Amino acid sequence: MYLREGGGVFVAARRIEKTFKSQPTIEGAGVHLKRAFGYNELPLFDPFLLLDDMHSANPDDYLAGFPWHPHRGIETITYMIQGLVEHGDSMGNNGKISGGEAQWMTAGSGIIHQELPAISPTGTMQGFQFWTNLPAALKMMPPRYRDVGAADIPEVTLAGGATVKIISGKVNDVQGPIRDIVTKPELLDVALPAGATFTHPVKPGHTAFAYVIEGKGHFGEFGQTNEAMLHGAETVILYQREGDQVVVQTQNEPARFLFLSGKPLNEPIAWRGPIVMNTSAELSLAFEEFRNGTFVKKN
Image (tube, rainbow, N blue to C red; front, side, top):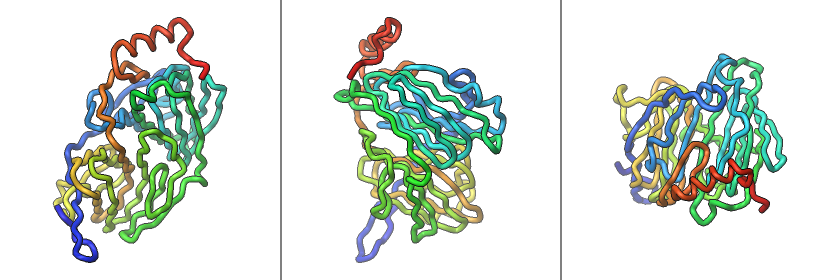
């Protein structure tokens, strides 16, 4: 599909490659969440490895949290809409993130951390965690950590009616606060009123996908009016690699979704639990070091 822009230039709008419904999963010490994609979808979302949707109005679903556990070879971004999560790690970092705030962590050579939700003021916990891969040359880089307050996340309103919170990446020359993730992913929280259109450029060859938080929208064909082609909450929409932009339209109801894009690494992936490396030998070494107490390096 091609869209005419000013000056007679044509820009290719991306089509949908696949759609997935998030699946109920239990992680940590008993946290009930929805997994949009993960190990079973490799390598479709490269450089993204995993997207978890933590959303429940029942504190029993999330209070058990994620006690101390290791990571190596990845970076994570946590973005909260409602609720409160406390964080601690082997570098001595401690922090809390609540609604509208984010946190990113580079596990690199190895970190041991915990994430412990507290009871939300509303009773509802709603947040997302993404894993992005590290290239082979940087798998063993020093760990890093940063909290991002809600006031540091800029919000822009676009001509098509969309309101966009920019966690990472750039919209209309406005840069998001998370800038040091190695794969330089783009992460946007998009609110689209009824009858509105969101148009956004995507670099050629980059992976791009959307995850619907609430409402419904058309994420594929521009001008599509078929009710059956509307995608609703807890759906992940993976785009084809061809095309220079994505176009999302709403009809009679608004929609809110996350939009992500990033450059694929195109490297082998060896993944077991919380550790992602390039070879099985590297995985075995990581778990051996965790058992013998040499996992965390003095970088």
